[in-house]
View (cartoon, helix red, strand yellow):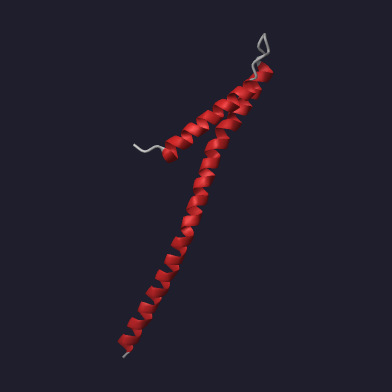
Length: 95
């Protein structure tokens, strides 16, 4: 009799843990998507911000004679192209 009760208790414990794990796996899909969006955000923002800082530094310290080139805008746009390429390469490119 004790063996049967222990077996039922053990089975109930396993069922409860399996139900809990199944519930959290369903929730994990949402957090996985949030992580992907966060990674894409960093991959887009970082090159553009670095391009902006570098362009601002070049604009302040190395003036061109004509003064027509804005290094800040040029490097921000270059950072955008780098960001688009890196997102494409990591998430969309299939070999």
